[in-house]
Amino acid sequence: MTDRPNSLHASDMAHSMHPYTNMRAHEEKGPMIMTRGDGIRVHDSEGKEYIEALAGLWSVAVGFSENRLADVAYEQMKKLPYYHSFAHKAHEPSIRLAEKLVEITPEGLNRVFFTNSGSEANDTVIKMVWFLNNALGRPEKKKFLSRNKAYHGITIASGSLTGLPANHKDFDLPAIPVTHLTTPHFWRFGQDGESEADFTARLLQELEETIAREGADTIAALIGEPVMGAGGVMVPPEGYWPGVAEICRKHDILLVSDEVINGFGRLGTPFGCEKFGFTPDILVTSKQLTSSYLPLAAILVSDAVYDAIADHTAMLGTFGHGFTGSGHPVACAVGLENIKIIEEQDLMGNAARLEGLFQSELRKFADHSLVGEVRGVGLIAGLELVKEKTTKEAYSPPGSMAAKVVAAAAEEGLICRNVYETVALCPPLIITEADIHEIMTRLGRALDRACADLASG
Image 1 (tube, rainbow, N blue to C red):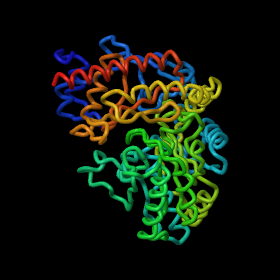
Image 2 (image 1 turned 135 degrees about the vertical axis):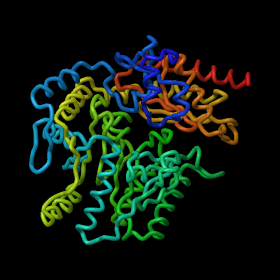
Image 3 (image 1 turned 90 degrees about the vertical axis):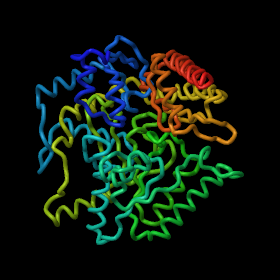
Image 4 (image 1 turned 135 degrees about the horizontal axis):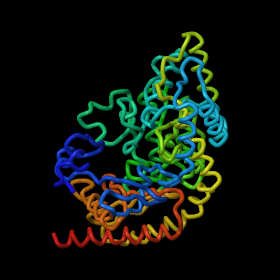
């Protein structure tokens, strides 16, 4: 408890700075300290068990106790614990993992660059695209297009691509040239009398008008998550992504698919771009790449992107970018084994098979007095909470009710996440039918508790 002066709780409160946390509130509240994991469940220092219905941070595909990943990490640590990939150096784990990623990602993405996180990866994408356009003699073609409520990371550059207020306010972001387009979420942002097809057409027209206003010769790339994750699990309207891809091709604008959350079967297909019928020039992945057992991310690029960059490195003598841990041998070994487990256990197929049950059971909450919309695809979903169903009026301050539901869920032994007005779920891919029913039971009790608290004032 927090009153133990020599406890881990007290030490954390005295010394640690937590991401995405009100630090003054943390000094009073203290942490929930996790001590072990078992399948889709985790346990805290007080002995309480939870179903981890967000897979950590959208990321633990194979669960929290996969010994094969620990064994592979240990064996690689003994054999070659670290080596870099600078200046023609290489090692087998990164070579084999790059080969595997090229095999399982959409055709035409044949080159791989490793980083340590999705944020670093998207930061690297920005630099790659700028480098490429300088190489091609197009120094003005540097702007990016993103979307409101997008999440692409938190470095200065990738955080600029992100379209969430909390990631910009008082960080002086955006700090690079980026325009954020309308969030492709029909339920929240469709206009009165507008059909979903009309909404898609309006967003595509907005894209065309933005390109015309800014100038296609100044816009380098459009980046997007196939399904927006950390902004609130927004599923795009029908026809949106094929339309975006067509417009980008017409105007010679690169299309970047941020698959950090969507990749490796989360949506019931290997990658999100395949779910929505478009082929990117650049694909970014992380999280489920190693089930987050170790930090790792990968950028895959088309031959055209690679050739332009490679030719320029031949002229300059180098590609002046990279990280000490780029393609870390232990992380790559774990990533390779993680993908083997996903394939051997058909976890992508499991997501596809259980999608119907997961999504239909969640949609039973659509009639709950707190819930405005239930949305999702595959094994990812969000429940957006509203104060008034008819007008879709949100609670104030934004996210306050979702935070109450998430807190009640934790008391019921269920970990999910509040993202502004949305309660998000994204369970490990190893989930079973029985697990889904238990998640729904605990979530239902949490919604009812929050509703009762609201009624009592």
